[in-house]
Length: 614
Image (cartoon, rainbow, N blue to C red):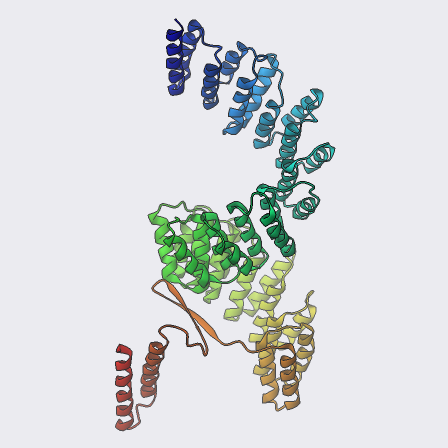
């Protein structure tokens, strides 16, 4: 008889596992009752798993459990609440909790964490406070497992006063307690509080603690604290795992310490998509787009498939390099792999095509985007401004305002740049006044003043530019001073540069360009004492003029050329080809010269071509 009952139980368990509909389960339920195995622990647990999968089985599930003696085991009740809390129906978990408590079930230390997790998921502040009250009444406030759940609940719901109160009242705190509050502060953007709490920790942090506080250090630029955490992670019992390493790379990048990020990346035994994303996006942020594309190629060789996030960074690198072919490949890859187009990818694509000069393609993608944010509009406006389409920029700005998109500081920077490139002085003044006026009330930043000074200097309105510089609420930077110096040189002004020099020296700048420009102005006016003084000042500050450089793209690969550098593998062939081109230019400019000269250059060109072929 027992063998038959055991076989029947196995059949019923398999039937429950395969069951998909409530009507079918009701038939199985009837067999469970008639067979007498309805109270078997294995059967009950399997039934609970079935209920947790169904969205409309709450009442039936509670009725089923009401026949089960919770005093024997609370596991089925807690399992049902946890099943709903873990899934995508957290409110259902709270409803189940309230129903089974009403039926007489007394929650225990395993019930409250599951209920609080569900309340945190749907941000049920009122429901969570009710549970907190029950916890106090039932005397579970001294249970560290329950208290940690309360800290997590209040932190997720951004009730940091309550979370801190629960944390401060805990008699015993473990690493979960500290990490719960620290991660809550980080999620709320309270980075200083997170770092301060970490420095007060009296228990050994775990990987989650390190990750949270490294995020805070990165957002605040606390490089020294981040380095200390890096060293501390080496001494920890669990070592520096992949998750912590990824957080370290992000911290170093955010703090502008690219060598530190590279070192962490190079030391990784294994790398995931997050590792590659951190270092590639970091290279782009630190203005190393060429290295970013090279590393992206290494990532593809390693067999890791890029996702939308990393492709957005790659598109930004292409935009900075003007690598149109590479950007087109990314575009085709996104379409070929059916990667979802979101606002971030669309904006990066608009930016890449616009900065590479493909304005029509940029406009086409922009117009095809169903959703746009201010970053999307700014990407298009910046690209148009770069290529001198000033009137199109002003036209699109009007459309942007008409559709209800509020411009920001970057929008006005694009407009002022467009006006500067095309000499639209009146329009530039108008938009600059709109920006800082009551209509938008956006305080101009240094970059906006720089555009206006440059615009006025290009229009030979040197006095107005100087007055605007004096009226600035911040000190002018080297670019503004350079614009004034260039205007002085064009106007032949011999008095103004000394006044500018006095203010420029106060900046303690190490930009060689302005020093050289000022020296040249004094040399033109034969003020040799001033020339000597400026050169002496450059020597004292250790300022040297950096060599010129350029980057071009060929067959999807970026090539950088620096003046005086012969390290390129094709350097000799490039120089020979340039020799041919310069010879041909010379011949075109000197057609009236004798046949002998032309024959001579043709002979030299043939020898050069032969050398290239070799």
